[in-house]
Length: 183
Image (cartoon, rainbow, N blue to C red):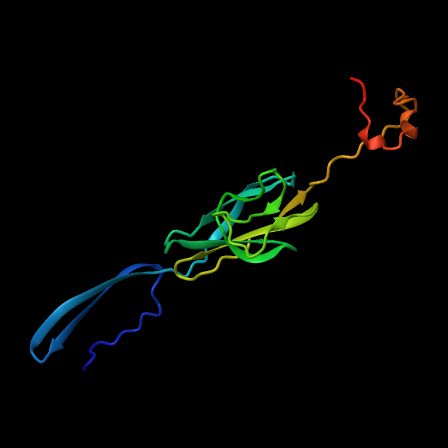
């Protein structure tokens, strides 16, 4: 086997190329073999495009840009601080159960999580990143700070004279949480 005209291709710019090889055996020429490939060294960028900063259910959308010379986006990864490390996800994503509570999905196309369960009230940082088909891993987005509030509001009445219930004032009622106030 003789290789004529060995060439280094280390200085190629990102783009699509066609590589042609022709084999010879003595004076007899063989078939041409043509391979097309895309050289892509640009990492994809990801942007969180929408989310509710204070919510009972955690939902968000994101967009990915793979640059001018693109091998295509292979997958996106999401991370929720204090809950899970990087997992595959799609946009729009949601951590919501059927009651509207902020929960880790059990079986959704948007996620693949090993565990599930509802999120506690508190602040969470959502990060998203993408990986293109060339294997370039993009940087994580700036965190989207989302405060989940799943607790019902507490109402304290002060300085209000409530009507009697069962012969007692509201403050004397054995279970004041279950009082019904007149309209």
